Image (cartoon, rainbow, N blue to C red; front, side, top):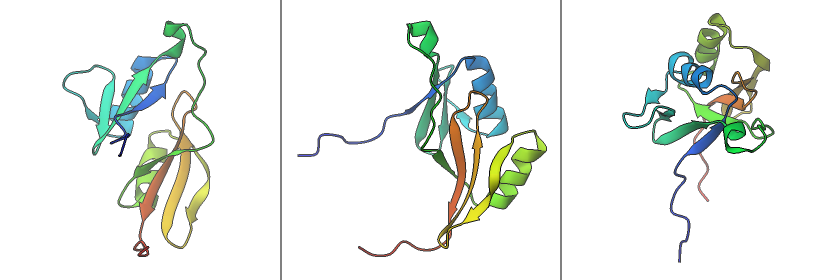
Length: 123
């Protein structure tokens, strides 16, 4: 029996939901949800912004496992984001199968531009 069927959304902790929405929609180009003010989509994945402190919980940025955001061309996407003020950590990495470039949203949630260019090996 399969209990878990899918990932329904990723929760983006924020201290300023308006600022986060602007970042994810206007800078990263995520698609707005027609039914929710603070949800946006990257392909089939929903990114839902929430403010933990408004629910009596401490704000803690998502760190240690950057969310990989798929793009067709990591260097070009990085250049476009740097042009609007996004700061990256280190150089763009080439692992031999993919390119990755690391950055964070305004709340410190860690993100990564990612593109796999080599085919996956058969299991």
